[in-house]
Image (cartoon, rainbow, N blue to C red):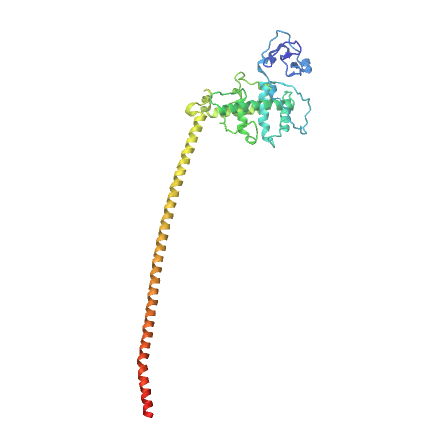
Length: 356
């Protein structure tokens, strides 16, 4: 339960800027007892209005959600910055928030590392102080983290679902910053992995409740340049002006993200089947060639074995013929020797008889 510290009336965080005790107060804080209070020095400059007094400025206020006030273990770097760090939530007007985003866009490219942003917060705080917007570096960090977290939540929701579309006043501004500065997009926890189409939405058309921007109060040249660049883009592309009048409805049916994913998956599957068919055909051709080569090799082996067998048979016949010829010659010699032996014996006997 939240209460006003001065009148002890129960006040909700959404309506605290409309409460009579906090009208025209630049900074509103919350103590440990959930009591809203404002800076006493601010009261001396701008005294509290009487009960019943109204003003139109409260419509431009918004409150930073306490769930995003997370302390980071970052040590402040050496900058010429003096100011007390408020550990309570500060009031941010729409003009101040747009100035914050303009300074963030102008200085985010100077980062050396996506997770070391202390110098960036100090630089943005000094830039806001130069246009009479008193915010400390921690308040700048908390507000920017809250905006980036809200942007991430909407971006991831819109990427997953095509029916439950979410947005907020500064979604297009932050999305344009993310599209331009892709240096730390891959390592940042704020940006999702799914890409989003770039939008040429002018800064003056981002908030439906505040179409006119109080440039005298902002007084920042970076913001003016942003507005001029956006208007030049719109004037150079008439088709963009006509498209902005239409509702940015998320495509459904065959044009939805799920349908596109299904079509892409089917195409990949057909491509896979076609590749498998080509591969199977190539394997069949290689197998057929291999079988033909094996058959040819077997035929060659058979011919070689047949020729080798014929050669061996011829050699065997030649050997048999040689052996037979030797046997016949040997028999002839024996016959000749047998025929000569008896004649010799008779002659010897006859010679012996004559000598007697």
